Length: 237
Length: 237
DNA sequence: TTCTAAATCAGAACGGCGTTCAAAGTTTGT
DNA sequence: ACAAACTTTGAACGCCGTTCTGATTTAGAA
Picture (cartoon, rainbow over the protein chains, first blue to last red):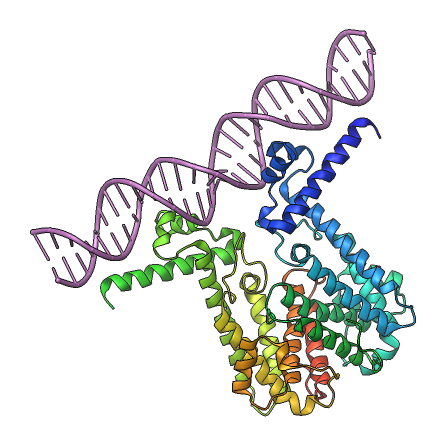
């Protein structure tokens, strides 16, 4: 990599770093090419040498942020023994919430309306990370499936219910998993996402430390509905 | 009401109607004072006679939209006999989703980042509607509580876990309800909200009619976790 | 090494936005 | 009839994304 390419990579990184800083400090509106350029001592239009458009920069940020979320969540999950299925699900769920509370702007960027006038590219802004998330959840669901299948509500699910890309990838990794287990994985996702997004967007009491307890209860209920014993677990905040 | 006041009310309504139209047709960015004025044959600054600021207009819209959501949801719930607890919960849940799919921009306005640079006023943009939502869900949880309390995961919840305003209002309406039932109501909210918001924001497969089935399964599982019999219910899409 | 083509930048410009302000126009009540 | 209140306009300010022109710097081939 020549000198030119190195400078370019460095500038690109600086743009992204400042964009992230503005995002954290001033919310989505503060992420503007002109403001970034101003802080870097560059003209706003100069950034167009590094990103084709502002949306491209945002997409790039979403990718990074989504990846960092998954890194953290997977790490938390893998800190629990693989045979402790309930513990791994609990760890995943708590990690998602803690990450979201620590990075609310990032959470909004990934799961909400990212930024004024932003339009996600086809296939979503971070298809790679999204696939990782799906696979991670499916792995948890697959591990829980032997216990869960007895307790699950009966609803017919077919592979054709899912997008071909997702279904294909999943069946590659988990050949013997029934489609109902994939539905379970998505529902687990929804259960975690619901309370977290209500909390991040301020629709929960906005008072005291309650949301943590509420979320913990929800996770325990999720485990119970999977047929997993949670009698002894209690204090993993 | 004099002629002047009537004209004023009419203009105010027209502003809101056009704002809603732009919201539906062009997304949040299309809601701009200048664009509204343009369509009305008014200068953009004239709107400041009717709304103190753009955020005030948005807040007003959120209020209307949130209210219309609750009207629809409560109507759906009340179409089911009061003693059919499971049916009422199912009706509520399906109504929320159908409304969200029919009014995705409204859903984003209420539950997401509403619009570029919008900052909600203290107490939220629609405290009245939010309270109605909480009470409605609490009513459902209260009706289910006799069945549910046996199956619920044990987690201590106290009144102090909730915001004083919410707790007070709820205890007014449901004097004998334990705090755990309020936690259950909020968790029901989260369960419905999770899948719906993932679907509205395009994080679910983006393929086929699957989300409906997934959501239905989730509602059935919710009912099951409440100890409500759902063996015969199946086809209420 | 010299020369050409590419990459990088600044700065002006266009049209959009929310908001403010002074001035003109209109309605209301006295 | 007239003063006070309200409504509206249009210009202005500063912000934004984006495009374009032209200058400057760099990389690689001759």
